[in-house]
Image 1 (tube, one colour):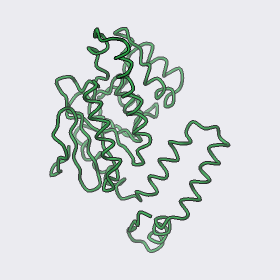
Image 2 (cartoon, one colour):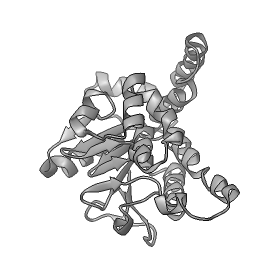
Image 3 (cartoon, helix red, strand yellow):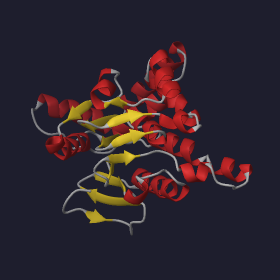
Image 4 (cartoon, rainbow, N blue to C red):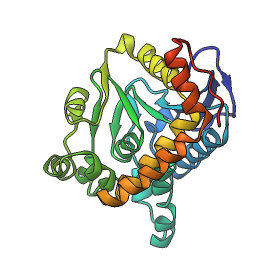
Amino acid sequence: MPENSTPTTEPQFVRRAHEAGIAWITLDSPATRNALGDALLDELIAAFESARDDEQVRVVVLGSSHDRVFSAGGDLKAFASDAPAIQKYAGLDRFPRLYQLIGGLGKPVICAAGGDVLAGAFGLALACDLVIAKEGVRFGCPEINVGVFPFMISALIYRNLPRVRANELMMLGDPIDAQEAADLGIVNRVVPADEFDTVVRAWAQRLATKSPLLMQLGKNAIDATRDLALPEALSALQSQLALAFTTEDIKEGVAAFREKRDPRWQMR
């Protein structure tokens, strides 16, 4: 969480703060290594819904208060509990709801991976738009090593990694380091520990200066067309571009560029 920011809710497992157009959402259950249990996921969903609905928020940063672990993934105790199968099944909807919420947020989301990103949290990172990782952190799907399989996040993994590398991660269960994750194209930047917070803040601040309206139109278009066949995707994107041409912000952006000044976004 940034300094001099204003908390917006009493923390339990997830902390929230706002600062100059940035919503900082921080996983804050160090005793469980930020295990993605039902209560934490409910708070996380609520935090993202709040950021989505807040017109002052232009970008979301998802991070962790733990200095070595972003999140260890799903709650293994819950997986092995004696709760009825139907109860466990009903609770699993939190993961797809969260991943789809991030995709359809209409605002860019940065995953600030300051610690290991494992299991279900790997899917959480892949659902974000940008990933900045601290040097030395690991990404992976170790579920198979404890008799589970990364069922839910396999959809995100297969959409972001080459098939055989995805299979290697899921079937062998070995983690990869941040640089290898960058080489695979699932991390944008690998940053030394002493520069990590500065770089995350700088990226968030840059994103916050962009047109919120055009960013929303663009992200929504990506979310709606990423799995369409090419002809259908191009048709839908043509419509979105035509819609963008009707906005005041596109005119203001071009005018500001020509006049060599900062744009004054109209949000219409």
